Length: 541
Image 1: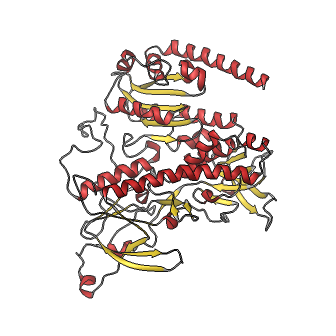
Image 2: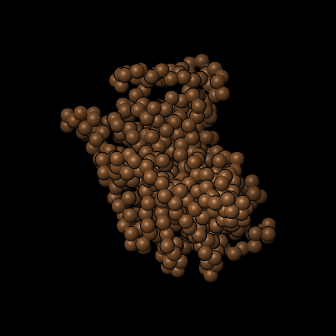
Image 3: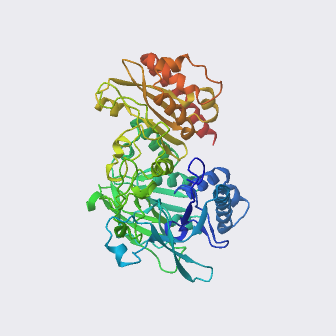
């Protein structure tokens, strides 16, 4: 909004202590500004790949020294990101205020009686280094609410920020656990499971579904991608307690060295099958079971802003809230699902354009197709499909709104329709698959994984791309462009790809679509060779 063509006076009000646990108290610095909710986990993931805990322990370093090395690296990464965001804000002339903002009460009786008066006053509470809080009032013609989200905390879990964590408070972890139990089957739970396993911890994943693959498919992942991720979890030594939930906690008082005892029960409080594990002993516990919009203490009701059934701010197709006067907009996690940084940024951009009536450009995320034509598939991502209107089983009300990335090791990513979704829509669809070990770079550097192209049989048009393996979150964007540009399987086959790149898998998958029987034989042979290679490595180890 501060940059051309808008060139407006802009004030950003940020409350880091109210929205998350990624704050450097030593320097009074918000390390999360401008970063995604999962910034710490991304930094921790990167650090876990670069720092070998076994090597540090082998050097005789104490456990706290090992963890301090990891945390320092994460702070450096997060601090670098935060510093650059502040530089950008300063460059475009945005005024930055660190404080908590809420809609101010009317100043006069006349304002209070005016039902049509737009809410344009914010009360800002700021706290100085001495702990003194002061309040001030700021007025603005247009207001954008982008207060993010916080972890959902189920009742019955004694969160303490020391041994029992949620997906935000885990940022304050002050030691490297040798064992950890994680409840959840979504993206965040799996990401942290892989991170702590890479850091040498014994990890147990507790999921309510009896089939781990099904739990991942419920959040939109393709069945083969889901199976590949689960197989990698098991191959990496992560234990999975299926059809289970936590019944109770026994946390030793004043003894961090003693393990937490977690009693398990079946789903919905039922008995677990005979032979199932009934108790876990771990150093730490993490609940990663979803997020909720940050709408508390904002005085939204005073502004006439309504929430949906999940607690997210209701918006229309222009991202306008229900506020009187139509001058208040919303963007990001505060609207509810899908809780992604990428969609939050896109919504923010769209909201600013709508604020100032900039309709000169072609509508974002639209291919100008006729949505009323049942025989034409529109690639039109509706960014207002959030919160209660968001359907996780189909990515969104329209599956082409945005790509999804899962930052596990290996990564997973997808865009567009899965084969199952296409068939349910009445599309005669099939798929072409390429294994990572079928391309030279994959075979040499990262052989485990696959890339799948979903396409319409009659036209060959690519409808979706699904990837699990190294650099999947980067590779997906080429796949997204194939889908949005309505490219066909033949288009991909006729392209020339640089040698020794992961992108060669796109051509291999397209060729597999043209020769399904031969492709299955080639994949079987490649998979058998990889399995033999893995067995040989185990014997050597």
